[in-house]
Amino acid sequence: MPFLSTKITLLSLYILTFFVIQNTFVACQDFKPERVHLVDSYQGNYLFRGNEPIIGGKTFAYAELNQAMIKILQDYQFEVPTTFQLIDLNFLNGFTNEEYGNIKVEENWFKDYSQSQNFFHWPIYGSVTNPEMYTEDVRTEKALTFDNWDGDRITPRLKITYDLLHKVETLPKFIYFHCEAGSDRTGEFAGCYKMLHFGWDYQQVIKYDTEIAGRKMVIFNSNHLQWYCYYLKENLNMNISCELEY
Ligand SMILES: *[C@@H]1O[C@H](CO)[C@@H](O)[C@H](O)[C@H]1NC(C)=O
Image (cartoon, rainbow, N blue to C red):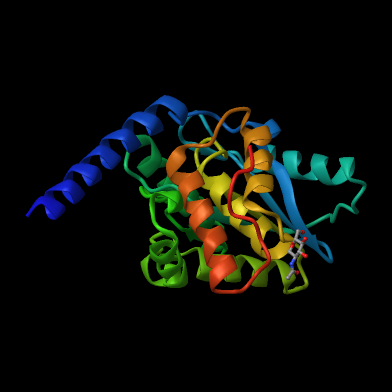
Protein backbone atom coordinates (compact mmCIF):
# COMPACT_ATOMS: atom_id res chain seq x y z
CA MET A 1 0.00 0.00 0.00
CA PRO A 2 2.43 2.68 -1.16
CA PHE A 3 -0.26 5.38 -1.23
CA LEU A 4 -1.25 4.88 2.38
CA SER A 5 2.32 4.87 3.62
CA THR A 6 3.04 8.09 1.72
CA LYS A 7 0.05 9.61 3.41
CA ILE A 8 1.23 8.48 6.84
CA THR A 9 4.75 9.80 6.20
CA LEU A 10 3.30 13.13 5.11
CA LEU A 11 1.11 13.27 8.18
CA SER A 12 3.98 12.48 10.55
CA LEU A 13 6.11 15.10 8.86
CA TYR A 14 3.26 17.56 9.23
CA ILE A 15 2.81 16.88 12.93
CA LEU A 16 6.55 17.07 13.59
CA THR A 17 6.94 20.30 11.63
CA PHE A 18 3.87 21.71 13.35
CA PHE A 19 5.43 21.24 16.79
CA VAL A 20 8.81 22.59 15.74
CA ILE A 21 7.21 25.67 14.19
CA GLN A 22 4.89 26.22 17.09
CA ASN A 23 7.66 26.04 19.61
CA THR A 24 9.98 28.22 17.55
CA PHE A 25 7.62 31.02 16.62
CA VAL A 26 4.84 31.02 19.12
CA ALA A 27 6.22 29.81 22.43
CA CYS A 28 4.52 31.37 25.44
CA GLN A 29 4.52 35.15 25.22
CA ASP A 30 2.82 37.93 27.12
CA PHE A 31 0.07 40.05 25.61
CA LYS A 32 1.47 42.62 23.17
CA PRO A 33 -0.72 45.70 22.53
CA GLU A 34 1.18 46.44 19.28
CA ARG A 35 -0.11 43.17 17.81
CA VAL A 36 -3.73 44.36 18.09
CA HIS A 37 -5.36 45.60 14.86
CA LEU A 38 -8.84 46.60 13.81
CA VAL A 39 -10.28 44.25 11.15
CA ASP A 40 -13.83 45.54 10.68
CA SER A 41 -16.54 47.58 12.38
CA TYR A 42 -20.29 48.02 12.24
CA GLN A 43 -22.37 50.67 14.02
CA GLY A 44 -20.41 50.77 17.25
CA ASN A 45 -19.37 47.10 17.20
CA TYR A 46 -15.73 46.33 16.47
CA LEU A 47 -13.73 43.31 15.30
CA PHE A 48 -10.07 43.09 16.33
CA ARG A 49 -7.20 40.64 15.86
CA GLY A 50 -4.19 40.17 18.10
CA ASN A 51 -2.05 37.85 20.19
CA GLU A 52 -2.70 35.86 23.36
CA PRO A 53 -4.27 38.20 25.95
CA ILE A 54 -2.50 36.63 28.93
CA ILE A 55 0.26 37.96 31.18
CA GLY A 56 2.71 35.76 33.05
CA GLY A 57 1.08 32.58 31.78
CA LYS A 58 -1.94 32.81 34.06
CA THR A 59 -3.58 36.24 34.20
CA PHE A 60 -6.15 37.31 31.63
CA ALA A 61 -4.98 40.74 30.40
CA TYR A 62 -8.46 42.27 30.48
CA ALA A 63 -7.48 45.87 31.28
CA GLU A 64 -4.48 45.83 28.93
CA LEU A 65 -6.52 44.39 26.07
CA ASN A 66 -9.30 46.95 26.52
CA GLN A 67 -6.75 49.74 26.65
CA ALA A 68 -5.14 48.53 23.40
CA MET A 69 -8.48 48.31 21.58
CA ILE A 70 -9.64 51.71 22.85
CA LYS A 71 -6.38 53.31 21.76
CA ILE A 72 -6.89 52.02 18.21
CA LEU A 73 -10.42 53.45 18.10
CA GLN A 74 -9.10 56.79 19.33
CA ASP A 75 -6.36 56.71 16.66
CA TYR A 76 -9.03 56.13 13.98
CA GLN A 77 -11.21 58.78 15.65
CA PHE A 78 -14.07 56.40 16.27
CA GLU A 79 -16.36 57.11 19.16
CA VAL A 80 -15.31 55.05 22.18
CA PRO A 81 -18.25 53.59 24.15
CA THR A 82 -18.11 53.89 27.94
CA THR A 83 -19.20 50.28 28.40
CA PHE A 84 -19.04 47.32 26.05
CA GLN A 85 -18.96 43.55 26.10
CA LEU A 86 -15.85 41.60 25.18
CA ILE A 87 -16.22 38.56 22.94
CA ASP A 88 -13.20 36.28 22.76
CA LEU A 89 -12.56 33.98 19.76
CA ASN A 90 -9.68 31.68 20.71
CA PHE A 91 -7.86 29.74 17.94
CA LEU A 92 -5.45 27.76 20.16
CA ASN A 93 -5.38 24.02 19.60
CA GLY A 94 -3.96 23.12 23.01
CA PHE A 95 -1.22 20.84 21.68
CA THR A 96 1.30 22.23 24.16
CA ASN A 97 0.98 22.65 27.93
CA GLU A 98 1.12 26.43 27.57
CA GLU A 99 -1.67 26.52 25.03
CA TYR A 100 -3.82 24.18 27.04
CA GLY A 101 -3.29 26.36 30.12
CA ASN A 102 -4.09 29.54 28.21
CA ILE A 103 -7.37 28.12 26.92
CA LYS A 104 -8.37 27.31 30.51
CA VAL A 105 -7.43 30.78 31.81
CA GLU A 106 -9.68 32.45 29.25
CA GLU A 107 -12.52 29.98 29.62
CA ASN A 108 -12.49 30.40 33.40
CA TRP A 109 -12.30 34.18 33.22
CA PHE A 110 -15.50 34.31 31.18
CA LYS A 111 -17.14 31.76 33.46
CA ASP A 112 -16.28 33.84 36.54
CA TYR A 113 -18.07 36.83 35.05
CA SER A 114 -21.06 34.73 33.92
CA GLN A 115 -20.21 35.47 30.31
CA SER A 116 -19.44 31.96 29.11
CA GLN A 117 -21.47 32.72 26.01
CA ASN A 118 -18.83 35.32 25.03
CA PHE A 119 -15.99 32.81 24.88
CA PHE A 120 -15.54 30.69 21.76
CA HIS A 121 -12.85 28.04 21.44
CA TRP A 122 -12.21 27.44 17.74
CA PRO A 123 -8.96 25.50 17.23
CA ILE A 124 -7.24 26.29 13.93
CA TYR A 125 -4.70 24.01 12.24
CA GLY A 126 -4.28 25.06 8.62
CA SER A 127 -3.63 22.67 5.70
CA VAL A 128 -0.75 20.36 4.99
CA THR A 129 -1.45 20.51 1.25
CA ASN A 130 -1.07 23.46 -1.08
CA PRO A 131 -3.58 23.98 -3.93
CA GLU A 132 -0.74 24.42 -6.43
CA MET A 133 0.29 20.79 -5.81
CA TYR A 134 -2.71 19.61 -7.82
CA THR A 135 -3.86 19.65 -11.42
CA GLU A 136 -6.55 22.20 -12.11
CA ASP A 137 -9.29 19.55 -12.20
CA VAL A 138 -8.39 18.10 -8.82
CA ARG A 139 -7.89 21.54 -7.28
CA THR A 140 -11.30 22.67 -8.48
CA GLU A 141 -12.95 19.52 -7.12
CA LYS A 142 -11.28 20.02 -3.74
CA ALA A 143 -12.19 23.71 -3.71
CA LEU A 144 -15.83 22.86 -4.44
CA THR A 145 -15.95 20.42 -1.52
CA PHE A 146 -13.89 22.62 0.84
CA ASP A 147 -16.69 22.89 3.42
CA ASN A 148 -16.73 19.09 3.80
CA TRP A 149 -13.04 18.65 4.59
CA ASP A 150 -12.13 22.00 6.17
CA GLY A 151 -10.96 21.15 9.72
CA ASP A 152 -10.79 24.85 10.58
CA ARG A 153 -14.50 25.23 9.76
CA ILE A 154 -13.90 28.62 8.18
CA THR A 155 -17.36 29.04 6.60
CA PRO A 156 -19.49 28.56 9.73
CA ARG A 157 -17.04 30.44 11.96
CA LEU A 158 -16.85 33.44 9.63
CA LYS A 159 -20.62 33.49 9.57
CA ILE A 160 -20.89 33.54 13.37
CA THR A 161 -18.25 36.29 13.53
CA TYR A 162 -19.97 38.37 10.87
CA ASP A 163 -23.36 37.94 12.55
CA LEU A 164 -21.98 38.91 15.97
CA LEU A 165 -20.44 42.06 14.49
CA HIS A 166 -23.57 43.03 12.57
CA LYS A 167 -26.11 42.39 15.30
CA VAL A 168 -26.51 45.64 17.23
CA GLU A 169 -27.39 45.09 20.89
CA THR A 170 -27.77 47.41 23.88
CA LEU A 171 -24.15 46.86 24.85
CA PRO A 172 -21.64 47.48 22.03
CA LYS A 173 -19.42 44.51 21.18
CA PHE A 174 -15.64 44.34 21.02
CA ILE A 175 -14.88 41.02 19.32
CA TYR A 176 -11.27 39.92 19.73
CA PHE A 177 -9.89 36.95 17.82
CA HIS A 178 -6.43 35.62 18.52
CA CYS A 179 -4.00 32.73 18.69
CA GLU A 180 -0.65 32.77 20.49
CA ALA A 181 1.42 35.14 18.33
CA GLY A 182 -1.44 36.80 16.45
CA SER A 183 0.23 36.06 13.12
CA ASP A 184 -0.46 32.62 11.65
CA ARG A 185 -3.75 31.12 12.80
CA THR A 186 -5.00 34.65 13.41
CA GLY A 187 -3.62 35.73 10.02
CA GLU A 188 -5.45 32.86 8.37
CA PHE A 189 -8.80 33.81 9.87
CA ALA A 190 -8.30 37.55 9.26
CA GLY A 191 -7.27 36.82 5.66
CA CYS A 192 -10.33 34.64 5.02
CA TYR A 193 -12.52 37.41 6.45
CA LYS A 194 -10.87 40.03 4.22
CA MET A 195 -11.26 37.88 1.07
CA LEU A 196 -14.91 37.08 1.75
CA HIS A 197 -16.13 40.45 2.99
CA PHE A 198 -13.66 42.93 1.45
CA GLY A 199 -12.99 41.08 -1.82
CA TRP A 200 -9.24 41.09 -1.27
CA ASP A 201 -7.12 38.77 -3.44
CA TYR A 202 -4.92 36.06 -2.00
CA GLN A 203 -1.84 38.16 -2.75
CA GLN A 204 -3.26 41.21 -0.92
CA VAL A 205 -4.05 39.09 2.10
CA ILE A 206 -0.56 37.60 2.22
CA LYS A 207 0.92 41.09 2.02
CA TYR A 208 -1.37 42.29 4.84
CA ASP A 209 -0.54 39.35 7.11
CA THR A 210 3.20 39.56 6.38
CA GLU A 211 3.25 43.25 7.26
CA ILE A 212 1.47 42.66 10.56
CA ALA A 213 3.63 39.68 11.51
CA GLY A 214 6.90 41.18 10.29
CA ARG A 215 7.73 37.81 8.76
CA LYS A 216 6.33 35.16 6.43
CA MET A 217 3.32 33.30 7.68
CA VAL A 218 3.58 29.62 8.69
CA ILE A 219 3.03 27.59 5.51
CA PHE A 220 0.05 25.54 6.81
CA ASN A 221 -1.90 28.73 7.38
CA SER A 222 -1.00 30.31 4.03
CA ASN A 223 -1.96 26.97 2.42
CA HIS A 224 -5.35 27.16 4.06
CA LEU A 225 -5.85 30.77 3.02
CA GLN A 226 -5.13 29.79 -0.56
CA TRP A 227 -7.59 26.88 -0.40
CA TYR A 228 -10.24 29.22 0.93
CA CYS A 229 -9.49 31.61 -1.94
CA TYR A 230 -10.12 28.83 -4.48
CA TYR A 231 -13.29 27.95 -2.58
CA LEU A 232 -14.55 31.53 -2.95
CA LYS A 233 -13.67 31.48 -6.62
CA GLU A 234 -15.12 28.08 -7.49
CA ASN A 235 -17.96 27.74 -5.03
CA LEU A 236 -19.15 31.32 -4.52
CA ASN A 237 -18.08 32.48 -8.01
CA MET A 238 -16.15 35.42 -6.63
CA ASN A 239 -13.88 37.24 -9.06
CA ILE A 240 -10.76 36.76 -6.97
CA SER A 241 -7.15 35.98 -7.85
CA CYS A 242 -5.71 33.05 -5.90
CA GLU A 243 -2.15 33.02 -7.19
CA LEU A 244 0.88 34.96 -6.07
CA GLU A 245 2.02 37.22 -8.88
CA TYR A 246 5.60 37.68 -7.72
C1 LIG B 1 -12.40 40.36 -12.55
O1 LIG B 1 -11.44 41.21 -11.99
C2 LIG B 1 -10.48 41.67 -12.91
C3 LIG B 1 -9.42 42.42 -12.13
O2 LIG B 1 -9.96 43.30 -11.20
C4 LIG B 1 -11.17 42.51 -13.98
O3 LIG B 1 -10.23 42.98 -14.91
C5 LIG B 1 -12.23 41.66 -14.67
O4 LIG B 1 -12.93 42.44 -15.60
C6 LIG B 1 -13.17 41.05 -13.66
N1 LIG B 1 -14.06 40.09 -14.32
C7 LIG B 1 -15.37 40.06 -14.11
C8 LIG B 1 -16.12 39.00 -14.84
O5 LIG B 1 -15.93 40.85 -13.40
